[in-house]
Amino acid sequence: MQYEIPKEIKTKPKLFFFLYVKDFLILVMGAFILLRVTNQYVHAWLKIPYYIVSFGFLLFMLANSTTNPGKKYYHTFYFLLKRNRYTYHAIDGNKILNDKLFRKET
Image (cartoon, rainbow, N blue to C red; front, side, top):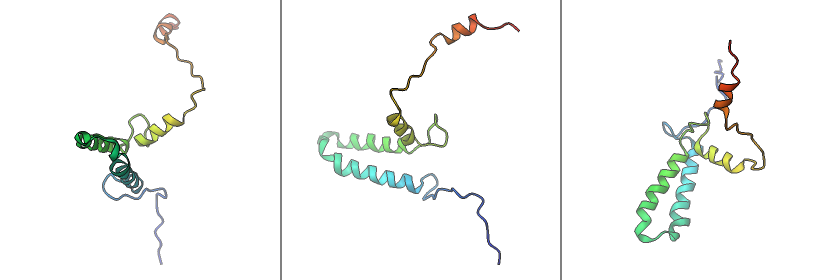
């Protein structure tokens, strides 16, 4: 009897070509929130544009992030909210000028 050993253990289950199970659950929960919870706060004239923009935003959040490889935009948004705002990061405002002035000639 021969058993196949999987080459990759951490594979995510896909539903469609680009939609994973976790993303589908996030999409369903987001659609529920849009259709049931926030529906009463939108004026009748603005419901169709509200749905278009909201579902577009949901699909954008499920897309792959260009700034964080391997992450989705909702991960990036979560990291933005979770960050420590009291951590100081020095930003060199004169980096180009300092590079020109202190460049070593070789």
